[in-house]
Image (cartoon, rainbow, N blue to C red; front, side, top):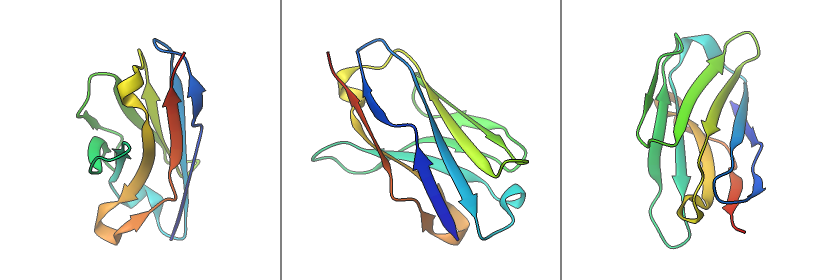
Length: 109
């Protein structure tokens, strides 16, 4: 099982980013996936869950999860970013206990 996040970087407050997580090594379309984030000095927190059929539960109002099963990829669209959204963002397959390496999002002017 491999999960590879991408799309992070430096963005100004109020800006947007779309993170991607490319998956391999398992039957992607059968699994729910999650996005977490971990800010400096804080615990990792859940920000979105995307079911196998593409339904998304978003736990923060600035994010929206989605997926493309044909591309084995899950996405996290982030809008109206604030400095406090600075964190490493991870994708996760909970039932496989699989994690990506994370992608750093820095929100700063």
